[in-house]
Length: 418
Image (cartoon, rainbow, N blue to C red; front, side, top):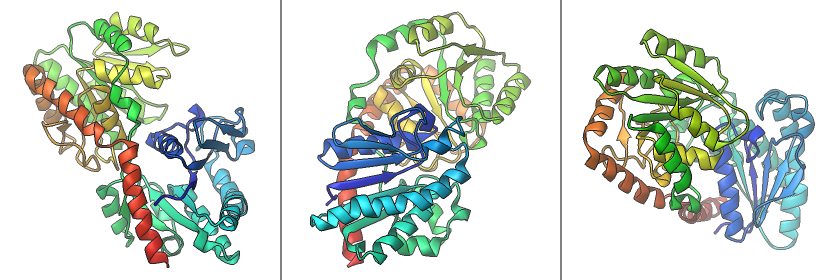
């Protein structure tokens, strides 16, 4: 059973300042799901330095923006000034958790679940364990440390962490990655918000589809990173266009320098790149601008809110989430829930069934991806089946289902701790 009191510790969170990758989405939606289920949730994250330090948002959820004094000195995002922020968390978060959450819960005869996310919080988990033991409170806390990615694994002292906390992972792929370090992990998958199953906003989707016209549209959203297989996407687009299909790639990356490599490859493949900049978050302006751009590659440099992003997924012919290394693949489930068709890689996306609910690439070869994209253009029945089956798959991965699994794993962790 999941304790009524829950603390989630993560550098990422719901603020735009702290929303860098899938982790921000994960912890925000996990907190909301737990709150909706009647739990009292404290979400600690490195939030916007200009926002309220403490904020009650969704029912049962309190946001705690930690290290704001450091974030004010490092305005780019939550990972800006990472070393100083890690040190601040290691010294300030554990005593707060023990004194303000665990001790009162113990006095009331209750327990606390503490979930620490990613390598930045490994020493925080260790310190919480140590401090709780020193105070005679270790029996009042279920302490978990969760791996979403392999980043920073070399910085963790695994023997100490595994003695302090139960290690969990978001997929079998991550479980096997942890095994390479001699670490046994419990698999607790990510989930999606139940509301996503309603699909993308039909009005936005219709406007975007009209803006696209008759040409096939491929969408790729993610960091500019070699792991995301951007070059495969560029090469596949070139191959598809060489076959006479007037396809267009809409790319939304970050500010990473690898973007220069990606668009350099596009130029090498004779693909013109048009940069689309606009201020604000006016999705109508985005649609209007896309309608008049004829370039094979459109580089969108603007913030896309969730509603617009999901409408883009649903309106496109396919969404390229074709990472070569993907610990879970939350985007793939979001695309399915939005009503889109997703191309996945072949690592952590265990929900993806090739040519049943998704297209799955086993290699990073652009020719493999191009082969599947051409097949999709030629077979409308396949496209319809992928959309329908994808929606059914997404329904199995709501947070309500994940919380049921989490509760059973917690029962096991508590049993072996006795």
